[in-house]
Image (cartoon, rainbow, N blue to C red; front, side, top):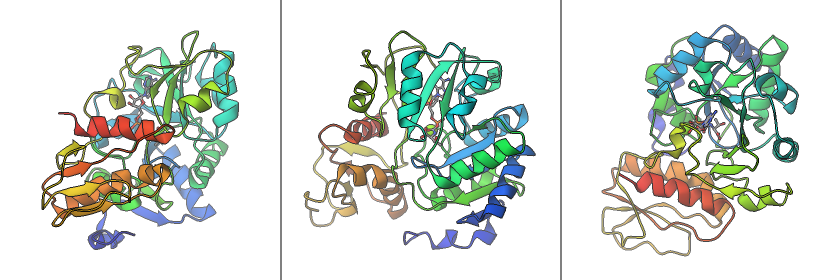
Length: 334
Ligand code: TXA
Ligand code: MG
């Protein structure tokens, strides 16, 4: 756990229960809590999600209320394997199945034409549904157990207030949502998320796929898996998608890109960039993968340390750097 979080080390102060490194029995308890209509925040390899039974309208309503998210922004349904895909989606193009087979479990969400399980309260009234099989062992164990007791999928947006930075640690989940969760709700602690930015979202409702939100599954990886063209098209207006809003993923402190930092500012940049005197270094990742992993924690530490502004030197290049720059542009907008 990072320093400066000591107030959150005392989990007893919180309303909901936290299971640290959950045992199989605690996973069972969490799955049952979901089945009973409660909310369970859980780790994925990208960011923490705030989970609820995707077939339970009341539970889903509570997710929206806890996040303060508009009701017409759809939620991603998480399933334990591709086996449940046909319950949620219909008319699935061949390329989408190829992507699912290649990258699930993993940091990729497919937008597909919805089938009977995907009700309006999940899809924001749209005709399509977002599906993902996450790779984190705690997430997979939870989803498997939930399905064993009759569940079909767990709706889970990132476990933060609407417009704020996604949580990549359990302390960040508590900071964001502890006020809004109740005694029946749970948080599963699975350590810091390894990827650190949200899944790649790919629209698979048309003849050709389009990447709507870049992430760890890159354009190049998608292109080399399927034989048809994939566009990078965040402007494809098929959907209401909050992550696609111009301003999102923002800390409270103002974020500025490629500016000279002054004393009192926070700085996030690759480790070859020096820290000027009086500037507070927020992170010094050595690789772009590390950059993604520490990005949101660096934003949070900027807020906590009360820096004047957060100055960011974005990473260059392809791969996950594309997703990082996307989040940085949104964090610095508005
Ligand atoms: O990595 C992730 O995707 C994380 C983890 C928890 O799985 N989840 C996540 O969910 O980032 P969320 O709701 O914070 O962001 C998902 C984005 C939102 O902008 C949402 O509007 C969009 O995906 N989305 C979800 N379902 C959609 C659909 N059927 N059509 C279009 N956009 C959709
Ligand atoms: Mg989100």
